[in-house]
Length: 501
Image: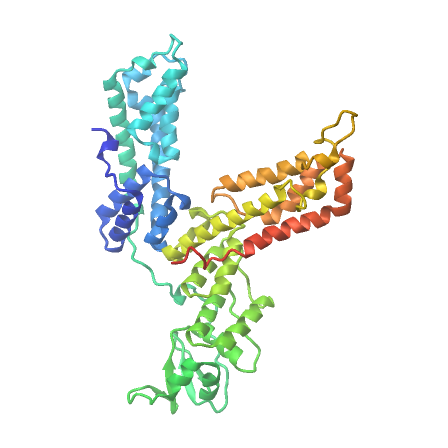
């Protein structure tokens, strides 16, 4: 039986759901079989998962990706050995006359097919093998020195069984790489502090103690907590349970935040120098604590400190982790800001890295949809600059003599032709097309590079006095308008939009 016929034919969404359930409940054989189905039926990229992303939590998706990387590495190595061993010495194939033989003395088309499976495992399919052979035979139909059309069916079946053995063996060797995980709670404890527990602020006449998760006591005033937090106002107004802990005659309230976070929080509440966390992720957990305890004014103060540059900002791939935490904690401004930062990066499993563990499935789905809507906004913006009917933003460029036609008298009919210079039309059209076809493996950063591309294109057209003159008069204004409209197209797209819900 052909290997492809042994595979279940679940739709990809069903396969992902099955894998998620198998991982969650520790069903290892089922998880391994379903993962194999996924890898052999589809390529594994964020785009391929599409609207199925919300089925699977980020932690499970991360483990699936690491397993896939391991499978690919083992499979590529085993297939290389298979090719160089003359397809395990299949006699009929190695003795075959063909106009194009590989260094292993098997037909080159067959060698290339074997190699392609190592790069894209879903090409391991009996139909794909036959398609590759049919293309070769068609191309060599009139070449009598090629015997590939007469390869016996049994030989092809023997080859396929040998190839299937290599593929199956590669999956079996990689089995230990698939970890079974349950949904991981997004806890602030995962962000490890590199600092020693802080020395608590010495507050005179304190009348309540708040204790951190790492057992550091902070003496504070009930009245101040109640003033900045309706949550604490209600909590502290309730009668204390008879068995509540008392320290030095003061009631104690246990909180889930660690001492570093509480120290920052108290430094903002009291009139002392503010102590901001030493990482942006910790800032997000501090903002989340303010949200949890209904400290709106304190939350505003923290955001002001961040905008003032008093704390680190996410750099490169940290933007993905920041987005994941902010979305889980419903910190909408930080969520939107982090999402915009991710546009300058590829959206791939490799770029997400360990940060993928922090994602809820729906959050990654929303980020994908956000990226698509930003791309659509950029395309619409470029459309407006490609318009040839004045008064459009590009109409200042109408009149380039290199694209104008002449009348019967030999004069250029400037008024009758609204045509963009070729260099500008090519610049805008190329970016328009690239955006339309763009994959998530590329940054969506046209807004930050369009001016540079404009100058390069114009320099290649430097011999045109007309375009040089337009540039001298209005080029800077034109570039600024183009950048601003692209930036506006990006800014009006929100993560919390049509994709949510």
